[in-house]
Amino acid sequence: MNILITNDDGVHAEGLLNLKSELDKIANVFVVAPLVERSASGHTITLHDYLRVKKIDKNIFGCSGYPADCVVMGVKHLFQDVVIDLVISGINRGANMAQDIYYSGTVAGAREGMILKIPSIAISLAVKYNEFFQDETTSETFYSTASIFIKKFIENGGILEIKKDALLNINVPNLPYQELQGIKYTIPGFIDYPKDIEKREDTRGRAYYWIGGKKGKVEGIPESDGMAIKQKHISVSDLKLSYFLPDEFACRSKIFSKFL
Image (cartoon, rainbow, N blue to C red; front, side):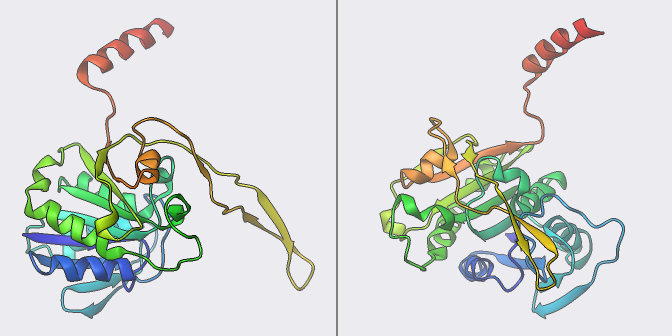
């Protein structure tokens, strides 16, 4: 199997390197990831500027662009002679759940793989939400938990469960593997972020602003990704380009036709 890995934390990020090390045991792994951190960049793609590519090691490249750029660069140029069987974006340092999926560069990397008609997975470690199940003072990150899960997922034919019109968005609790309570198929929930605007002054007395980055409160929506993480489960969600089934589409079309 040929696997292309990208992320939004950067080509040297610990989560990416941990994932590559684990998947090297079962597949041919290729990496194209941003040269600098591109977190919360959404599905940005570079159309009005040039891209630069730097070789880091064998089959590992850094790109000046964003996660979506990296996937296109890998599939269409750097590894165009290789049939990529799977795109994996991650392992992200921090969960990508609820409305965060719209901001996430990690999810965008997997979405770009899906657009290119390649089975794709976004995987994140829920470090930001560790207040649910461990001491907040700890700085330990269990990337190996997510890496081992993905390896087992692939070995047991999980790639066959990826729908053609959807990517798999996986969030893993920041816990040792043996402390996981299971896996739940989930829907995106909602996180109530404060998003306060903090005004500061620079050394010359000029105003500048920060959008508040405080932790949000996960709403208790049954079957949601946030609740799964809270209960120490791995969360797996389908993220589709089209959210309507044919019968739903026909029903909605009939309703909106009344407004013409």
